[in-house]
Image (cartoon, rainbow, N blue to C red; front, side, top):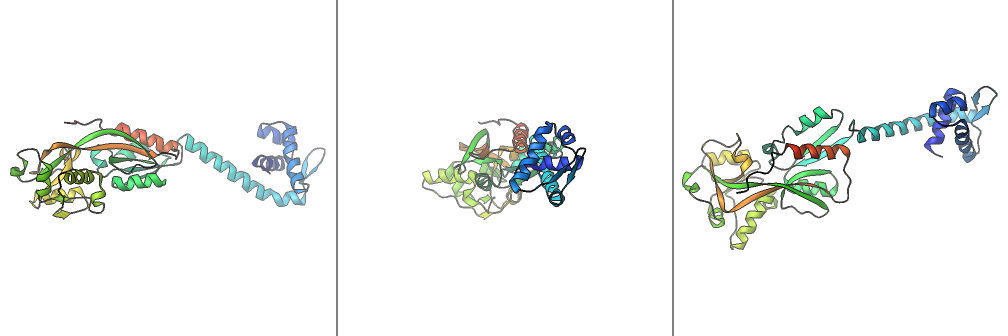
Length: 301
């Protein structure tokens, strides 16, 4: 049995004629008749009494009709859904955002995308790059923006641009010259992303640099959000790190300055997607919007 057989049966029953059903379905009358005949043959049951002017349902046909109508309606709904997804008149876009997504002008991503495609549902998840990469790897998310390095097994990684990372302090004496990794390790540090700790990509770079010098980075205070860390820094509790996008934003507290690292440090922003999983048209289009909204390559020092 097939959807085509059920559809031919339903339309023939509703119109009372193979000829009328053929017109509705856009196929020939013999084709409609053959589809119904095959359905009857498969189950060894007669569905119509074929009169000279009109088809009449048998008892078996009467029993089958409501079930066949449900099958056809479900198939047509599925066809509409797939068509809507392909035409961006429906479907869901799933996308992960890096920790500092708002500072790269991505805060209005949903608003702009939804204005263009109001019938597409959006699931935009703002996590640390560690979890965005893991969620894309497992298929929970289709794609995302991350800071490198990440564990990229099963991922396609497309670097987009680099954003320099600075040392931030409210003490002018600590901002006289570029910071060495040794000076950074000795500083009173207030670091954010406490939940992810040294799995965070920026912290991983700093930890690797310290390890090469036989040193270890330890934070005096760890908090979850950059805004909380900057608040503590502005009150003299310690120093932190910020990317250029944050340093040049309105979030940067008055009185907190920045200085580069002696060996410049960069966050590399990248787009990721699953290596084997396909992308829905909605997510593919959301990726395009995200790329377009990123301000472009930032100064690289």
